[in-house]
Amino acid sequence: MKKVAIIGGLRIPFVKSFKDYNHISNQEMLTTCLNALVARYQLSGKRLGEVALGALLNRSTEWNFARECVLGTALDPHTPAYNLTRACGTSLDATIQLGLRIACGQIETAIAGGSDTNSDIPLLLRQQLAWKLTDLRSAKTLGQRLKILAAIRLKDLKPVYPSIVEPRTGLSMGQHTEKMVKEWGITREEQDALAYQSHMNAAKAYADGFFNDLVIEFKGVKKDTIIRGDTTPAKLAALKPAFDFSGHGTLTAGNSTLYTDGASALLMASEEYAQQQNWPVQAHLVDAETAAVDYVNGEGLLMAPTYAVARMLKRNHLKLQDFDVYEIHEAFCGQVLCTLKAWEDAAYCKKLGWDTPLGSIDRSKLNTKGGSVAIGHPFAATGTRILAQTAKILQERGSGRALVSICTAGGMGVTAILER
Ligand SMILES: CC(=O)SCCNC(=O)CCNC(=O)[C@H](O)C(C)(C)COP(=O)(O)OP(=O)(O)OC[C@H]1O[C@@H](n2cnc3c(N)ncnc32)[C@H](O)[C@@H]1OP(=O)(O)O
Image (tube, rainbow, N blue to C red; front, side, top):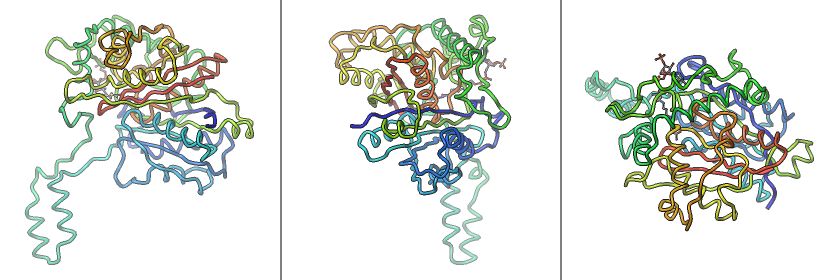
C-alpha cells in the first residue's frame, strides 16, 4: 500500500445562510475552491487521477455536479470526476475513497471536496403536480391536455422545501440532539462552555493568521462571518432554546451550528508523486472507519462516531488518549459532549466491543482552531474544512497524530486518523 499524503486544502469563507452568498450556486462556490487549488499547486492543464465532490442540497439537473465543476477549472479536461454524498460526512468520505485508490496505486493525485448552500436551494414541485405535468407532456390531444390542466389545484403549486428532518422519525437534528443530551445528562452550561471555547479558539486562530492560507476571498467576503470573538458566557446563557420549547430545552442558536453556505476542497497525492512535484506533505491519511446507529429503535442519532472510533482504535492498536489533536465536528455542542461522555462510560463501551471505557480526552487538544459551531457547517463542505485545518495543525506541530470525527444525518459516523 502506498502512503497517502495530504498536500493541502482551502475553502471560501463560511457565511451565515441567506446573506452574503444569496443565489450563489454550489457549482460556483466549489469551482472557485478547485481553481484556487489549481493556481496554488500549478495544476493548470494537468490531469488528476480522480476528483470526488459532493453537495447535499443540489439540483437534480446537476446530476453530473463534480464533472461540471472540473470542467469549470483550468485542469486538463481529461480529469474524471464523480459525485459522492454521505450527508455531513460527504467530503471526509470523498477523501477516504480517494485515499484508498491512491493507496492501491490506481491513481497518483486527487481532489476531494464539498459544498452546500441554503441560499440557492433546489425547490421541488409537489408530487401531485409533478405527476400531472408528466402526464401533460405525454398527452396526445388538446382535450387530454385541458383535462389535466383543469385538475391542477392551487394547493398543488405550494413548493416543497428541503428539510433536515429524519424521514423515519419526523424529528430534526436539533430535536434528536435534545433527546441525546437528556439521556446523557449534558447540561446547558456545559454546552454553552464548549460553544464559547469554539468561538474563542476560532477568533484566536484568525488573529494568529492560522486561516490566512486556508480561506480565500469570495464575493468580497474575506473571512468567516459566524465566528463571534465578542460572544460571552452571559450572552450565550441568555439565548432561548431553539428546538425544545417545553421549558427543558438546552440547545440554542449559540450552541448549535447555524445554517451556513460555503465550500472547501483538498489536494491529495501518493507520497512519491508529492515528492516528484516538490509538494510539501502536511500529513498522511492513515486509516478511516464508518459506522451507523439504530436510531429508529432508540440509539442517539448522532452517536455513530462512538462506534467508528472504537473500531478504528482497536484495528490500529491505539488508545483514545494516543492523539495530539482531536477534531470532532460540532453539529451541536451537546452531541460532542454526549460522544465524549459515552467513551467514558463502561457499560456503553462494552457495547462498542471494549472491556474497559475508552476514557477521557485532554480537552485542551479538542478543536483548537475552532469547531463547526463557530466556523459554520455547510454540510458537505465540513469534511474537507476539518481535514485541511487538521493537516495544517499537524504540519505546524511538526509531528503528531490526529483523530477526525464527523457525525451525520441518518445516524452515521465517518472518522479518520491523520499522522505526521
Ligand atoms: C450531522 C449534523 O451536522 S446535524 C446539524 C445539521 N444542521 C442543523 O441542524 C442546523 C441547525 N440550525 C438551525 O436550525 C438554526 O440555525 C438555529 C435554530 C440553530 C438558529 O437559527 P436562527 O434563530 O435563525 O439563528 P440566529 O443566527 O438568528 O440566532 C438567533 C439569535 O442568537 C444570537 N446568537 C447566535 N449565536 C450567538 C453567540 N455565539 N453569541 C451570542 N449570540 C448569539 C443571534 O445574534 C440571534 O440574536 P437576535 O435574535 O437578537 O438577532
